[in-house]
Image (cartoon, rainbow, N blue to C red):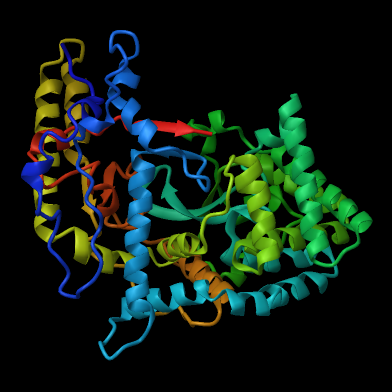
Amino acid sequence: MKITVVWVCLLAGMFSSAAAGQTSGVASSTPGPALPYTPSLDVNSMDRTVDPCLNFYQYSCGGWKKNNPIPPDQTSWSVYGKLYQDNLQFLKEILEQVATPTAVTRTPPEIQIGDFYTSCMDEATVEKQGLAPIRSYLDAVGMLKTVNDIAPLVAELQLVYGRTMLFTGGSTQDPDDSEKLIAVLDQGGLGLPDRDYYTKDDAKSRETQQRYVQHVQKIFELLGEEAAAAKKDADTVMRIETALAKASMTRVDRRDPYKLKHKMKIADLDALAPNFDWKAYYSVAPYPAFQILNVDTPDFFKSVNEQLKTEPIENWKTYLRYHIVDSASPYLSSAFVNEQFEFYRKYLRGAKEQQARWKRCVSYTDRELGEALGQVYVARVFSPELKASTLDLVKRIEDAMAIRINNLDWMGPETKEQALKKLHGIRNKIGYPDKWRDYSSVKVTRDDFAGNMARASAFERRREINKIGKPLDRGEWDMSPPTVNAYYDAQMNDINFPAGVLQPPLYDAKMDAAPNYGTPAAPSATN
């Protein structure tokens, strides 16, 4: 019989005693916390009261599910989720260690991540600041006179708030030459997660749309508007976003890369959407000079152009004010934080409780300064020796795959040749990048959390924009080293396994290599 990946539940714990006392990496030279060890194989994950012939999954993983109920601040739970939480606690201890200056010299990455985390945890200062961190953006919106003034402000806001500001822009691989990077424009501008939330008409969708309008109204009320005015503004936002959603491509269509290929010159873009000042938009960021860009969704920009003609400037000011505040809400005072949670995590995703502030602060630090935090993280949990041994394991898997491809009777010689070429061309990114990202230009202070978030976001946005016209950097990572996840990038043809996911119980360097060749089908549950 074929043994499937649920063997992790069945064979759990068989090697745990032999592994006791070992570590998954080389300890950091700096004394500090240690990541909890959870053995990859644990027989307590089983539910022996169940007949495996009737419910094999419950038999193999029922014990784990019973002993690991969904935490109230989570929308689902699994082995991955538990490792993520253990990892979060470990990162918290690291950040607390480097947050306060001591006689021990902190490295530049430790200073940045420590001060960033400190600013996030300083709730008193955040409460005192109120709307001050975004006041300049709101004032800029208030000064808009005509629709022609929107473009430069949208460009500035996108540096901080990205895809929520009307549309998205940046850099991408040239669809005709994957070694080059060109400018790109794509749909965006929505407050709900996807276009389908606006376009579906079933009872649940109508309820969600109504709840979203109530959320938007609440944001305007928190800005000081009376209920009637806030409701009117919320309806305006919903009308604009619904038009944007109807012009957006579906997720299914977006899976076809040919449907996203629309290369054109700036003159063509001006003809496509003449009511938007593209020259001003590209000069504010600023973008490097370029001749060709790809517009993923031309119909979307035709719709934007039409709305710019039909919606008065006051309505656009309403739209922009909402998205500035809603995007910044997680980093503002508690009233805004709580409203964000109530709609997005509690209503849309089913979380029962807000995550502890320290968890959010760790996550923000990882998201904005991931490779600075990653340097400190891997020093404690993922040594160069472990990286080398993991790369060797991956190479052995690829060698086995090559043998299987050569032995396939349904694949012709030319197809096999191309398959092997792709297999041997895969770039395996294991643990952490060979070259660390330099955040030295990001100003981080201990008393300006929202400002730190804005500056870090702008740094990343400018870094992406500045790739335009340059060769592709195949060493770049899209996940930080502490991330408990992994991905395959089809355009880059690379596989990425951050150090965070290469920890027990998902990957256990204490054990024989055999269990590590399979990725566990982790037991899980959802609300």
